[in-house]
Length: 127
Image (cartoon, rainbow, N blue to C red; front, side, top):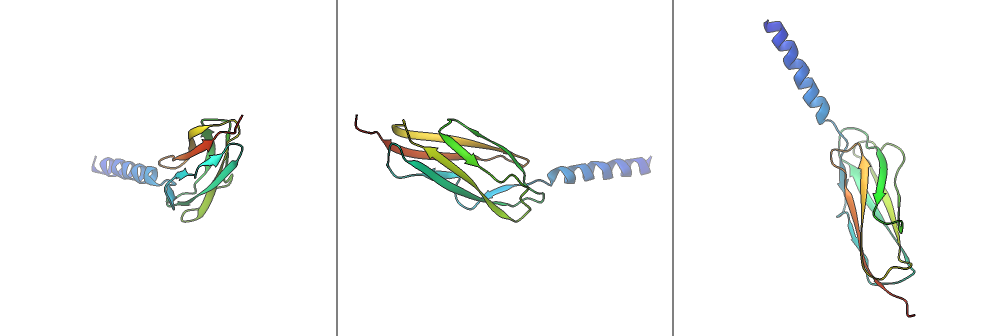
């Protein structure tokens, strides 16, 4: 009986520690970009630099955007632990006016998936 208890305890501890090993995003700056006032028609872009501070390779599978005016380019290969990389986000201000607030949800195998935020005031074209 004592042997079975030891084996079960070992399996439980092994499972707990196995689940704790994950990839993890650590952004080198806040995952929010606030651009200066911008005339309508400009294309704005920003690199969000991050590090995989977890213990397993980080794999980004998808980026969900709130508007087709926002495009995202992310690494399509695993990012090793302690390595840095970046996510490029572009925002097309064409046919946009006034305050714009967009979000990008990153889906991955990380412990917590980040949300990137884009903010800009777009000055409308004179009609």
